[in-house]
Length: 282
Ligand code: TA6
Image (tube, rainbow, N blue to C red; front, side, top):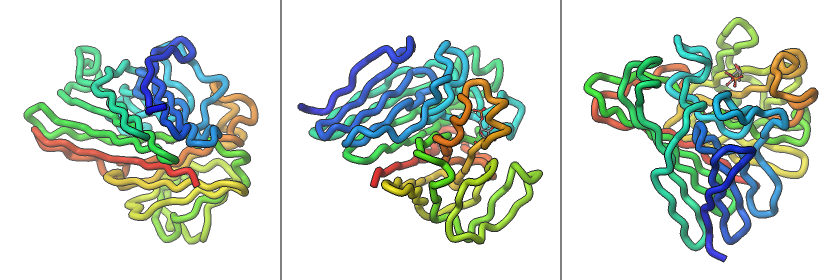
């Protein structure tokens, strides 16, 4: 059977299901161009989607890969993580080959976006599913006549069996801003990062892949174009204040995000910027 891209309804929202001959699958909602599910061949889900996620078509969806644009977190005057994650995106391309499915979704400025952020922009997210790989590429074009300034992220919620038993390798030696310690900047000196408390860090200029190890599986995580890596887990107290996460849900999720957060991107008129995150199930 060749690879396919099918238009489906997912919890009442318009979405697309990508499927390859080798058995990889992904579901992408038009709302926010948000990847909500990814199962490499073998059929084990590798993204966390909260069982309490809200699918009302307006609220941010807790889980999968929210696209944060044109603002990461609270680094500016807009709503947290910007407006792109709650707006409907349009399908701009669908391609399938012998064993890959590639979907392009786009969002351009509108009256609603300009009321919040008075700039012309065009954003596309390309989602590629191939073998054990999920590749997400965010491209931002500046069709206006002034430099565009933004921060952005692919806010990837990974599914983990037990967060405390997960090991993140590859961040040794990089500096990070620690949101749980009044934004103090610290250098990571551990061999591995183990999550045993609330963790909310922006690692700066990470120029090598990160490996998420669990006892019976691993995930390679690479970013191009996005200089920063965010690691987030809300842990017990903070997650109790997040209504769309179930009790204990924080144990089964770990966000490892590709971000342009520390330095806003300065995009001159007429130019384009892109950033990519690649996940490889091992
Ligand atoms: O990327 C980490 C972070 O900015 C955390 O500080 C936390 O707020 C999280 O994102 C989730 O944000 P959300 O707006 O989706 O609740």
